[in-house]
Length: 214
Ligand code: SF4
Image (cartoon, rainbow, N blue to C red; front, side, top):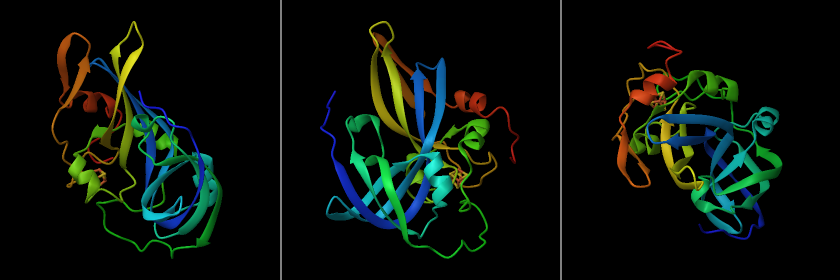
C-alpha cells in the first residue's frame, strides 16, 4: 500500500457542498457497517498554492462551532494524506478555520436535493444508508445533505488482516426521494472466492428503522 509523508498546507476557498464523512466496513455480503466520523467540505479555491477544487475533512465539533454552509468563504490549514486510497478527502486534520465571508442563509427550496442545515452524526447513524448511483452523487445529489462518499474497507483475508480499499457513494435520505437510484450492484471480493454482490438487501437492513417517507 502506498504511503506518503504528510505535510501541513494552507487552503482558502468557497464551499460548494458539505457532506457527512463516513467509513464503511465490508465483509463479503455478511456485514456492511457504517461509521460517521465528521464532514467533508468541498471547495473551489486554492490549496497548497494551486487553484482547483479540493475537499477538506473536518470534525463534527468543528462543523458545529463554525456553522459552515454552502457559499461561505473559509480559510484554514490541513494535512495531506498518509494513505490516499483510504481517504476520499484531499486533506484532513484541519485547523485554524476562519470564515472570511459568510454566505446569506439558504433560500427555502423544494427538495430534492435537501440543501439545509446539516444533520448531526447521530442522525446519520440512526437513519442508515442505501447505496447511491455514483453518477447521481456527482450531479443532482452533490449538494444534498443526505449524500456521502464513503471510505470503504473490504476485508480480503480476515486471518491475515489484509483489506482492500475503495470509495462508494451512499444516500441517507428518504426512501421516497424521487431522484434516488441505487446504481449497479457492488461486488465485494474475498480471497479465493468469486465476488459476492451487494445487490441492495443490505440497504434494507441498514435502513430498516425508518419508513418510506422518513
Ligand atoms: S437520492 Fe438521496 S442524496 Fe440524492 S437527492 Fe435524494 S435524498 Fe438526496
